[in-house]
Image (cartoon, rainbow, N blue to C red; front, side, top):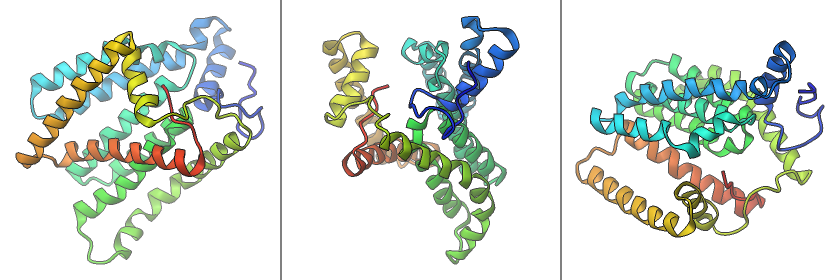
Length: 273
């Protein structure tokens, strides 16, 4: 609201979710400091979130399952609550879903415009919430892998030349985000999170928050783990772990590995939201 949010120029604080701070500043400058306008940027992003969740349904084989999944996600208060806060969480989720859609669409169509959309939405998600650094880096790496899968280049030079332009365009905002993240860490601003184990710090805690208690959270986590494991095994047996399914699994496990590496090598706390 004060306009003092530009990284490196403003006070170094992880609570400065830059894109949300910028948009909130614009709205409050134009319409006044009513709490509605302070939160408007985050609230409006739920439209992007819902639109891209709906578009992602086309990559799920069963229309019935995809519709149920869509309804579950948009009615989950744990998720939707992020969109009523003047924070970058909701905005970052919306744009990460958008980036995921365009990445999957690129794997299906081979249209190189999808690369630019994927990288653009990834960078927007990153500057909405820098704690998404790991999944954003995973998405950027997956663009390269999908290119190799789609084009099967004869030499390593070919993909480097093909992806040189889109990667160069988005390299500067990515690098600035990485450097600013290190600045936040060195200043002691990354105090929120957990030093405990990944399962307890992230999965058990999130399950407990969604279920309402640790007892029911653990039960829910066990059931979801069983369902997830069985579905993956069935997909492997049915040879359907490919395209959208495989990309989602790669993003999921790549993110987990990334957070483990950041915690054990750089000492970054595990995220808890």
